[in-house]
Image (tube, rainbow, N blue to C red; front, side, top):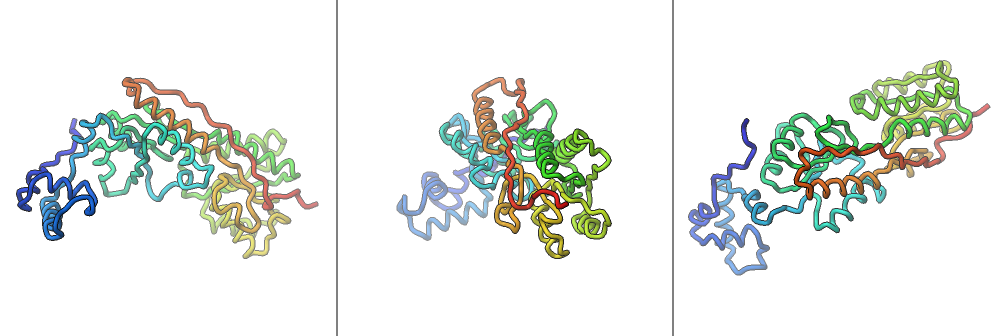
Amino acid sequence: MSTLAASNQVTLADVAAKSGVSTSSVSKVLNLQPEQYRMSDQTRQRILDAVAALGYRPNFQARSLAKGRSHNIGILFEGSLPTILRDNDSGMLSGLEPILSDAAYQMVFIPIRQGSDEWKQMLSDRRVDACLVVNKLEDRVRQVLEQLRIPAVLVNGLANESIPTCNVDNVGMAKALTKHLLELGHQHIWMYTNIHVHKHHSVAERESGYQQAMIEAGLSEQINSFHMEFDAFVQKLVQIQQRPSAVVVYQHLEAVRLLQACWRHDIKVPDQLSVATFNNAYPVAHVIPPLTTMALPMLQIGEHAARLLLEMIEDSSNNKVVRTVPRFSGWHLVVRESTAHVMA
């Protein structure tokens, strides 16, 4: 099996020799601010040029071994920063940060980009003591975490039994949102999911909750769940003769787009169509009309994930023990002006 340990061939002494200074001078340039030491600009630049020319990289693994721990928690994610991380005061970071900070840990955001192994190098250098993986755990990421024996927790995703997960009760949440529409007198209710997110586990779970609510209301024949491009869904909604009176939208940004599409096609929300969605994140409260949503319990999930990570760091047998984490049901309905009683 190939090792992922860092192979830093260039040393501090090599940089010192090339720039004609002592190793302590190189260390000052690399670790201190210019105002914290006395050195000419010319000498400082010569050291920086030597670092660049030799391709020197600090040996973070040695530093971590010397200190015992890095006191960093890696936040691993693919693509742009996920909504559940950058949400407002009720977001997951608001749950993570205070608990980690009290334990003298800080978060390090580590994007996983196609064609780049920088994330892998950061883990190999032992710059983090544990990782929080967001939304999905790719096999290649799992293999690196297991090989390096780095404790990890997966949030908003599914994994095998090798890693604990923290997820919301999507079935119960979708069922409650659909019941809200049923209580308003709606019977002809559609559910829409953009085709580009169909692989995430929460899609099937939310659809299940929607379907359960409809079946329990005796409306199984009215179940219509669509996976399609947004423009195609809007076209279907506009052209169909018997239009639904309400739509449950899987993702809040798609619900915002749907409000705009309804405006363009002179479909009045909520008079002619009620729209409800998930995730009480920006900008659902600021659109016209403001969207009815299910607020996810991301604050509580963040707190639980933080405590679990700290426990796994302290537990030397964490690579053998997988903690069972229940589904979080602390979601709540936020009723706004995008839903109303069905028109007679």
